[in-house]
Amino acid sequence: MIKEGDPIFALATPRGKSAIGVFRISGKNSHKIIKKLSSKKKWKNNETKTNYILGEAKEKIDQTLTTFFNSPHTYTGENMVEISCHGSLATINKISEIFIKNKLRQAEPGEFTKRSLLNDKIDVTQAEGVSDLVNAETEKQRIVALKNLEGGVSAFSKKISKKIIRMIANIEAIIDFSDEELPKNILLKIKEQNKNIINVIKQNLVKSKLAKSIRNGFLVSIVGKPNTGKSSFINYISGRDVSIVTNIPGTTTDSLEVPLDIDGYKFRFMDTAGIRKHKNLIEKLGIEKTQKNSLISDLNIVFLEQNETNMYKDIPNKIYVKSKQDLRKKRNNKRGLIEISSKTGFGTRRLIKLIKSRLINSDLEKTTIFSRERHIEKTQKCLFILDSIDFNRSPDLIAEDMRAALKQNEEIYQKFDIEKILDIIFADFCIGK
Ligand SMILES: Nc1nc2c(ncn2[C@@H]2O[C@H](COP(=O)(O)OP(=O)(O)OP(=O)(O)O)[C@@H](O)[C@H]2O)c(=O)[nH]1
Ligand SMILES: [Mg+2]
Image 1 (cartoon, helix red, strand yellow):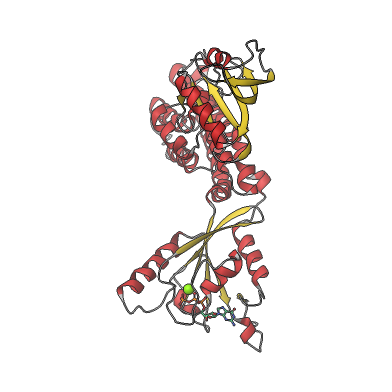
Image 2 (tube, rainbow, N blue to C red; image 1 turned 135 degrees about the horizontal axis):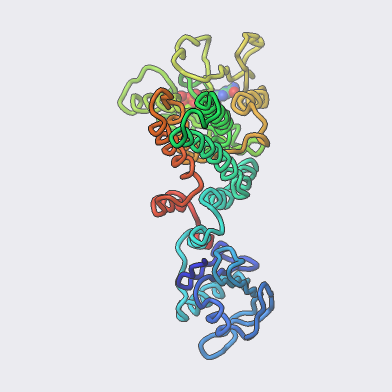
């Protein structure tokens, strides 16, 4: 059953000067309202016609290309209209004004998708996919988001649910039937089933690490002593002067993040105050921040002055680099050390290649399952419950645990606790989607 909400509208394209602007309208009476405002009165489903939007005195406001969509086969499930008008601010403002006068309400961010979800046109993970696709900045983010939109996450989680339900049916058979009526070793079989589900989930979680990083970006921190060329490297790879460079040691006092698209992957390079002895409070705070960031980074690039690698024993996931190669006569052939120059660009491609290979070590096409923290959290909870089932307990207690695990898994794609889920999903939606 489609529920129709109050009539809403939104400009689905950015407000500003452009060739066209697209308005979307959805909800109760939306067809009636637009027919009243249009120079043409008869519209068939999915029909696109040029027409005029008319003002209060029936004066022409703009020539538009308008399409009517009949419920339930629309994005929201409700009756909808899409209007492409000329993209000037004057036209957009005037049309918006007329809409408001005619009882159309300006939509909230993500309200169209919310209605789509409430009318079961899409499920929760697909709504997340829509949001990610609209926000995708890099090629790989686009690929991951599209897979979610197409239902990749739901398909996987539903498969897991099915397996758990089958296992619950078996354990319930033990509760309901006597030993003679049941196949031998049924408990052993259930244990096998459980192990199998656990393995599938674990494999998926390993793969999901990559998908999550693709969505959020790989965090790479640049650490090292003062004047080793950290900021110069950040400036070189971003092609801009984002960080101040001087020959005064301790120039960078704070952490500074620079987003970069490398071969379609999002990276967040972080210039830092580095790690050294501090002379004042500003330096102390900057260094503490560097240390914290290095722990949460996917990778740390340690810029060396000499061979002080023992200073960085506590830094996880690192690559050693020595910059200013252009000033040295001799090549440093030390193993595990990359020489670069931010003046000439020497070695930088090799370094980027190494960073990429350290972080992306599997094929994306096969690894696009969970890209959101929410999916991973629910799956981990499900896994934890299945993993800690004590098969020595009574079958009804085992069944109870299994049902709890099932609930966690179902929450990935079902509309549980709808308001809370909506808040999370729609936090980064834009108006008109
Ligand atoms: N010749 C040459 N000079 C460099 C290179 N990289 C950095 N420098 C110089 O080294 C000095 C320090 O560079 P920065 O990039 O500010 O070094 P940093 O590690 O960010 O220093 P702090 O912010 O003080 O920790 C500057 O004078 C740069 O011009 C390089 O590859 N070649
Ligand atoms: Mg610096």
